Length: 352
View 1 (cartoon, rainbow, N blue to C red):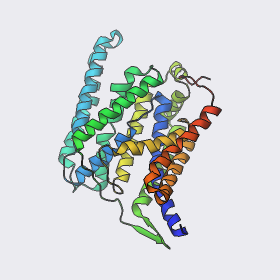
View 2 (cartoon, one colour):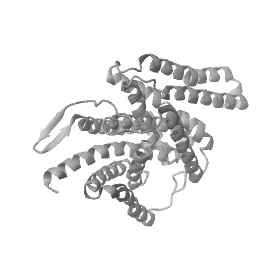
View 3 (cartoon, rainbow, N blue to C red):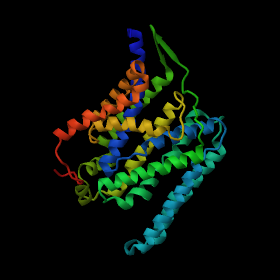
View 4 (cartoon, rainbow, N blue to C red):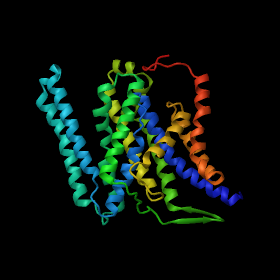
């Protein structure tokens, strides 16, 4: 391997590592706030990529129909909960009106936008925005349907539910997108040549957007009330409840941010690789390896670990292409061994 090949592989590793970093940060966020190991994170990657691809090939994005269906299911659950609760029954009319606006009216409006505007002639940034409008609300809806009723369950139960949600979304993805893979139009045709190294505009977009999002997340957690509430919930759920922080709302916000980062990752990688309905699972697992390196608690270490995963995958594809997945996932074994020997037991409420 000469220097030029090493530089090309490093570029590819940094590009894919930036995607894995966003996914690992989303996984750390969800686990810290809700104790859910969010296995379906990769499905949002696939849904985002395939929804954008459907628009660009002049096909109706059926994910909008799925959004309406999820909205109806959430509204029914909210209505039953409201009518059964003596504390909520007095203000049931107002509560149901708000729920109808959030879970019925808003998804229908998004469905209408997708029907009318989801075409190849739409300006690409607006296509991306419409894709995010369709996919991101599925995050808090999944939390309401699958995880909120079990918020106090053990981590093992939440993991089992997460696996079930993953398989459900895989099946729904096959139904609404089909078995064919898709790619999207690159965001930029720019190409910068530095000696033997050629840097594509798409790689620059991916790294730039990823870096901007990581910086935005830092300021969100450090400077905003909602971000501080999420941090407090992650540190100690019981203490957060005692000081008036709504852990349910924190969970919904965590799932919303995770869905947004997953969908955006799908939009970013779709021009570089063919995405299938089940492609997100493997991508999400590699983000999970980065999250494990960070102990599912440390954002900086998870991001750095994800870059390591990207570089390891890139160089492994050169030296042993058939074994690159094995090499990447084997990385998790020494990390788990080291953490099991050095970390102390921490209970579900964050108290040692």
